Amino acid sequence: MSAGRAPESSPTQADADNRSIIAILLVAAFTVILNETTMNVALPAIMADFGVTERIAQWLTTAFMLTMAVVIPITGWLIGRFTTRQVFVTAMTLFCLGTLTCALAPSFPVLLGGRIVQASGTAMMMPLLMTTIMNLVSPRSRGAVMGNVSLVIAVAPAVGPTLSGFLLQLGTWHSIFLTVLPIALAMLGLGVWKLRNTGDLTHTPLDPVSIALTVLAFGPLIYGMSMLGESAGEGSGLQAPVALVAGIVFLIIFVWRQLRLQRADRALLDLRVFTHRSFSVALTMMALGMMALFGSVIMLPLLLQRSYGLAPIQVGLMMLPGGVAMGLIGPIAGRLYDRHGPRVLVIPASFVVLAVFWFFSTLTLATPWWAIMLGHVTLSTSFAFVFTPLFTVALGSLPRPLYSHGSAVVGTVQQVAGAAGTALFVTVFSTMSAAALIEGQPDAAALLSGAHWAFLFAGGVWVTAVVASFFVRAPDNVEDDLPVGAH
Image (cartoon, rainbow, N blue to C red; front, side):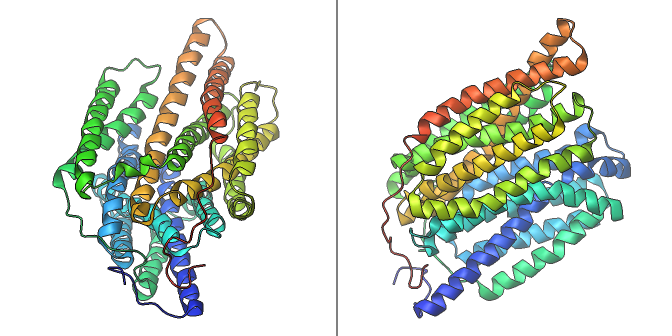
């Protein structure tokens, strides 16, 4: 028996246990990701309560994002070194402590500290969920189960702002955390009761230098990108470029150190995942997709509010159907993947995404709101047919010992690509809008002109993803040492 592997049981019992484990992790992941997007709507109330400026209040989301970017690369080592239950209990305990701190925060610094603790727990959940699925689910059924992951990733962020707005109508911003806390505590209790270890444990020693390098690389990288987006068109100093250069330099050092350490199987984040061609192709396309998706999610609300004059609540309701549709389509896309493989889904969906970007680049002030909403729903649905197969192909292409590191790499790329997409979209939008204003165009028309260029830029980037879609290949359908009863 492999080290750390749970004792074998009957196939029927093991199959039921596996479904319970995955269900607990799915609900827990939904809860922590739901929390991630609740802050934006609550910022005005928090600013009023604590008397802080918008730039200071924005650190509640910026610090959360930075913490995620720093912790996710470490999860590959954590998941391999400790049992599933230990990692889950650590993640949910941190999340619950952070949530309780936020709910009772007497000052802004305490609230910010609570958000950082929350983010530390949140960062562990998605890599743990994906690694567990790879360990428990046979290749024949992984698409369907990964489709549920897509549901979590898409629906939770879409529902977060709507739930936050509803709770703010009934009470104060504290109610957001007080609503999430009991659910998180229930998941923590279920995890302590039901979870068992699902993978093989390693005894890789912790490398403190690598941990320091994750902080010095991914922190400044994400921060620089976020600052680049915020300061676009304002000509504000060297803060963003300096942070980006520092992040890139330390990222190169981090990669160099991992390459040295992995020769002795001591890497914090094992980069041998990139030696597997299908993983690299799927990850490249996934990164481009995350850039386009995050950029669109930022761009459309800006456009709808500033050019079309819609209220934030109207914009939120217009964006909600797309997020929900993406989540609901995920499981369907997963089942189709299991039957037909990735290409019949990824290639057509990639062309539809390209068509939607072209449509968004042709918007005028006369375009009806329902057409824009329909475009967003189409875009989100198409991304569901892209991301579900890509998640499955990427991780399914790896040998079992690299599952946890592959999950950590996927999570890290999501964070970096999302931040890059946001920064690039907003930079193009702001630059071209400013140029249109100089030419004498009215404000609304100038902003629309900037959006045209931003979506054309997105389409240009996405052409690379369309080409990559023809090289996506299903991993070999091999039963890779799955436990008894894996379904």
